[in-house]
Length: 296
Image (tube, rainbow, N blue to C red):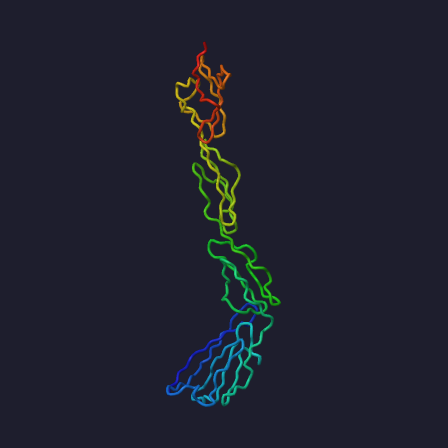
């Protein structure tokens, strides 16, 4: 026969702010390697405790037919005999005392689970009246709604929040950059205004906003047109070596003196030709702006 001891620790909520009291009991166990307690006639077997659990408290050389136990209750319950833990005694296999934990006030079921969120307390099966829980969203998500819920009258006071994806880094654009931004209270960029490099034109003005963690397509910087690409034999006058016109801009070209351009069928003697820039490409009517017809 030999002896050993174990520590059993229990905790209890002692106020509405969830402070904890820790109780540790030193338990001596009398262990007989040659026989088991259950094999002794009239031995006291641990009884079940409704809504609680047992903390053994045998003294040395205790008779297995005469035992005393202490029991504690789950969160939100307390022994029916009062206090923070209860006790019961056993004689010849029969227990005396009430082994039951009753609800302490009105109890709430566990708070709703929120996708991509965690509750900042250990998860429990029951919560007592006045207990508060706080939700926090995981990384790359932002909370929407009230983050704090309170157990009142058996229910949680408000609907749970939701966790939305937060905005990723804003999209960049070729030949431009964003010049103005708006941020939320966490410093995350949620709205952008863009500007193009010199001679480039935005495909649309205004801002873009991040919604549900996604950015819409940003504007494009449309290319200018280079007028000087027309060959010399086009017989156009007053062209510089490199003349640019921006997207959507119109420009009037003129034929050299003594030349004209047949612009459409049955329309002739045209000496002025209107062209328009479209994202780096010159647009014109039916024919290229070539002044190839000499006045007779």
